[in-house]
Image 1 (spheres, rainbow, N blue to C red):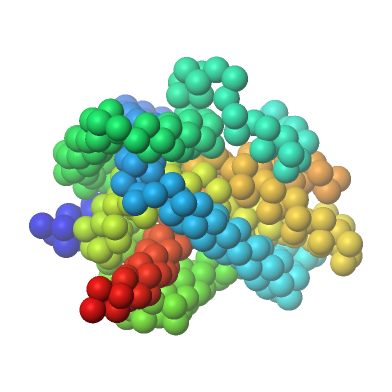
Image 2: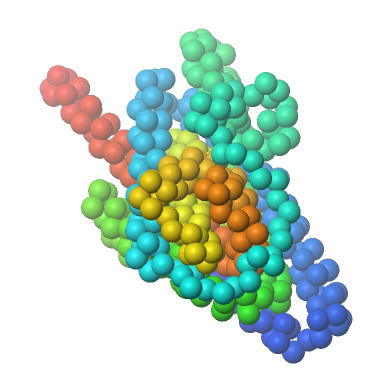
Length: 423
């Protein structure tokens, strides 16, 4: 059934792109097909499906994190689990930024280009990148209801963690009742996700059909070197770096890891949203990779917030492309600034469609590059945004799998002395 769903999603993805491309090629721009079928039917159908996914994201994150903390044998496990997950996410992002800057510096996308970027105008709310201290302070919500209504994932994570710890600290019969309530709530959320995912092929078809019908091919061809460079790093990360890390650390078959994440990749491609893919990532980990719900429930929501290696690749390559297109030389000092700022912004990037392009605008502003260049970045954003989302979410899966492996190993080692003592 699971493989059947993945196959149907893949078929829907191909059929949607094919139909959309045919409509764009043969239908009049203001004709019936473009105005009614594409905008009204495909647009509405895709928006409804994404809205259903977003409906469960916030309660799913809160419930799964509280349930994960409550399921720990002791609160001390949380510190170990959290430190492993947090550290691996940061390391993944740093390595991704280094690789992206290195390859972009070697290929030099946009060098000598005459793209007329000065004629492009984009109206974005540009702001300075947040400092690390500001991000830490912002984690604690002043108004918890506002955090839920705004979908502030970091603040929701904080509230879920302290709620779970508080339940563990009760140490009486209330602990069991509260833990059981969240366990039941988590089961309900998983069932709701399964119901929504049964509609995934239709949602993917609507989303990709609209994409194929509205894609600006001329804009893509004009920045082929930029798109190609970014995709090269992302494809390497997806099909070489992650499987190799999984193979070396967990001894899993790397090809099997790619097969098990196929449904997740297809869904991420169509939605271009790390947050919307959270339910699929959880299903992939628990149902296909046999990762415990305790690890998955903690690491996946955290990864959807801060494990943005794909977005980091996107921003780094896009900035170097813009610098080359404008004839701006980025020296060693500027590249170090680019890397550090990209790291901060990657953590702050929202797991929503178009999240990376907004933070790219902040990055351009910080380095003194023309904001007008966002016109051409936005023209091809849908392709690269979808690709970087796949890298983000598969990275969540890879890190969660590695953490689960180390957790099971440490549990086995701690159990051995107890067994010897009993003997």
